[in-house]
Amino acid sequence: MGAVRLGWPRIVLHFESATHHATVWVDGTEAVSHEGGYTPFEADITGHVTPGAQARITVEVDNTLTFQTVPPGVVEETPQGKRQRYFHDFFNYSGLHRSVWLYTTSPDHVTDVTVVTDLDGNTGTIHYPTTVAGANGTRVRAVLRDAEGREVTGNDGLAGTLTLPDVHPWAPGHGYLYDLELQLHLGGDLVDSYHQSVGVRTIRVDDTRFLINDEPFYFTGSANTKTFRSSGRATTTLTSCTTSNCCGGSARTPSAPPTTPTAKTSSTTPTATAS
Figure 1: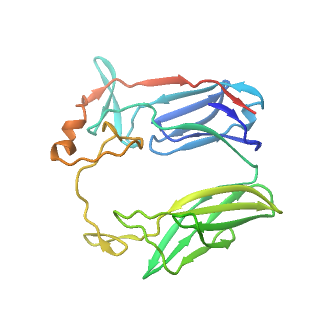
Figure 2: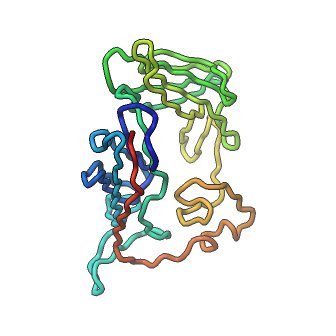
Figure 3: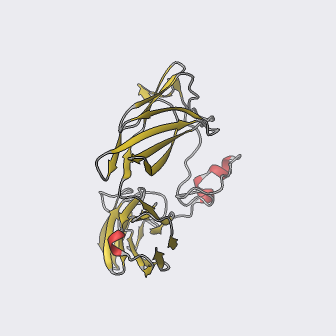
């Protein structure tokens, strides 16, 4: 993973995806367990590492499915032993499906933000309730920049509303994104900064109509499963299908047997140095 050189004392190990159950150890000490292959998770490993010393990160990943997992499944007893039965048309992969990285923060840091957008004619609003951890006396400053990096508005406070009188909305085929930066100040120092891309839009369902920005949106085409050769579970180079054969599920997805042996994989990452 390389050395941590940012200088902040809080060290975090972040996983984008591990399917479906993951347990992580740092030098033999369990640091975190997580269930759900479609959601990221992380662990504060500050107490498990020593600056300047190497640390071994070990990850065990188990793809057993139940009726509580996504996707669902059930383990059955068969004459050949336990077998995993599942009810979807793609293979039940297991492993680390996205990136893993180390990062550091100050003990005073942004822990969460919920972004809610709205539109009223040409005026857009962004609500940003935020939570922070650390010492009393910290102050949050929200700064919004347009796609060219120009600051367009800002506000102080853990929660608030940013108003855009002449908003550039997000729309299908026109995915315009603003950059919302949440700055955490302690005294005169900037101790943390968190960036979140924001598309200003509304989504609602009206009877049988799906509306984006109060305009009907019609879904066409087929979905790409996780076994699609160029995308699947992780984001890769974008490709386009221009023929029906390209978009047919059988043309790109291998047949999966109705039952597969349950699998458990264990992998050890290269050693990492924290400094």
